[in-house]
Length: 190
DNA sequence: TGCCGGATCCTG
DNA sequence: AGGATCCGGCAA
Image (cartoon, rainbow, N blue to C red):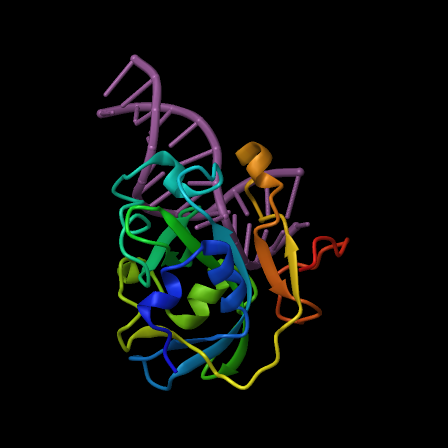
């Protein structure tokens, strides 16, 4: 069933881990597009120097600081879109970046990587601020699954963030073929 | 108002 | 290894 707002209104690392294995569902454009979330990153709040919210409340981060259970979508390098889901109570400035999907149905193209994920799911900046309790874009718990084996690793592309760059806030399903990058070292399981 | 650089991806 | 290509954030 569709995840309710209280799922998102919790500790960001917990939400990130629990999102692994959930289904991201996109409707409103022909056949339903559905993929299994296999890789995420947690951006835990304004004190997290890798997070856009560390700049404070601005036009761009307004949605991140808004209520949980909404989409935060931004444009990166002028080309690609990235999809996040806002977590924790309003005013906290935290979100989980969805980095890769295992295609399940209705998906054409690559879903390994946040930009490719958005392209395959038909998500752009018009989705910024969208309420995930609606029918256009939401996350569903497929139920009936065992607890997945999760690997924790440093986040990708945040080397500018000092010690926060090293924090193991990237999570993915161990041995899943759809994860965007393979680690050389399998550190930080958990 | 101008400039710098990025939570990426593709090609060479 | 480097280019694409837009816009947010900050300095002036």
